[in-house]
Amino acid sequence: MTTPTHRLLIVFYDKVPSATQVHLALKDYAGVSRAALATKNARSEKAAMWTRDPLGCLPTGRLSVDADSQVIAALAGSPLAASLGGVAYLCDGTTPLQPTLTVGEAFLGTLQLCCFQRRAGLSPAALKQYWLDEHTNVALSTQNTLGYHQNRVINGGEPHFDGIVEEYFPPEASDSMHAFFADGDNETQMWEHIQKLTESSERFLDLERSEVIHLSDTRII
Image (cartoon, rainbow, N blue to C red; front, side, top):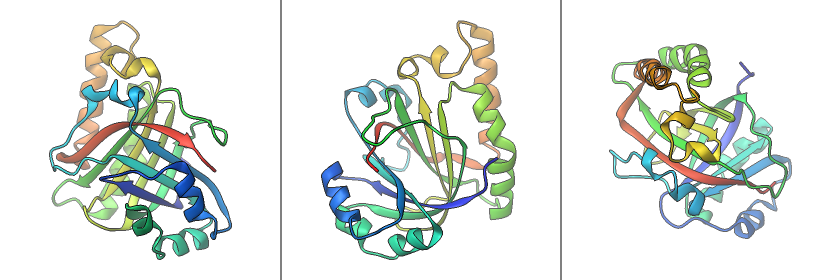
């Protein structure tokens, strides 16, 4: 597992700003090493079968910002999120699998954004153990994942979430369970992967308090 680092995620629940608006908003903050803006488009709409909205607060977009801890802290305490029309979530993040994107490049598949609340009665320490220490290899071995960020929310606005998962999938996984669950054409293995992933996920997250949507992600810095 990678060493945890602070990340800032701004989640949008209504209108999503343009890349130009984000650039202008970030211009006064030196030290940002990476920023990516995820929005809905035709590619993400193709993956609508994976959408889950039990809480009625489905995200419409996401801005991720990576920088050193001081810059992230300054951004989290600034009016940046409000100025862009989003909600800021300061996170303790790990990246077991870094998606490869150059500046200006759009990911050809989709980004699955899962914003979840932890299972009732689960402590923050248990969340870390089950999710960051034990679940990671399960997620990577049962899905056709091309990139994976785990973001444990340290401080965030409303709606409240304990964790935000960013997983990148190839285009063929948008509307195919076989392609999504990394099993080729093996039906038995696909259902084994689904069961294994579900059982592992339910140890730490509440599926009825989890919002899931696929978006199209573009690196802008």
